[in-house]
Image (cartoon, rainbow, N blue to C red; front, top):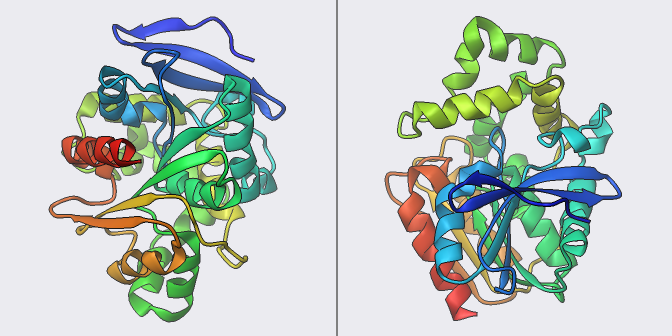
Length: 287
């Protein structure tokens, strides 16, 4: 069920998408009769990180929706850490598509949104036409490198401080969220960073965002993806190393394209907005 859309910017609208888990805030654009594209944001951003891609999709006739994921939408912000396990976020993808009335759609994800998208594409190949994953590798490839690759272990250990309840929140929000603000590269405009910080400063929002790290350890069993897939990874990514990125192809049985973006770090949709958009449009047009 969707509430009546409200104008967000001149070409974007705010919508609320109601599911059994609660009501998700979302940004939508493009003709309602267009081919459907669902875009999942990463941590610690929200749906507006796809602003550039949303506008381009609409200009090419697609109907694009970017929800604020669980924890980021106030209407889906459970307190329990276990509520942020990937299985719940993957179910959210299906539930959001159902609420939108979408029988088949293309799926795009960045960072944790990409992890969710990998699993959803493997689980729902009859509903998801294509997958475009950005920055985060297939979780099976990530799990393997977390066991065997010292470089990836070092990169992931850097995030351990985020898993300490209460302490991480206080440190990140202290001094007008100085540590939190420092996490975004300088290429992202300060206005956008302020928008993210305001979102994460809502009651319970930062804890919910960090619970994505606290609830998931990548020790489960993961399926390969059979739908046409394009994976974009920034060569300067400080979170995901080259081995996990390169090994992702072992987890795709369908058509696959892996692209390394030079000069880009982990926040690819914004650091390399134009390049990301061109790859996304090309991938959709191909399939």
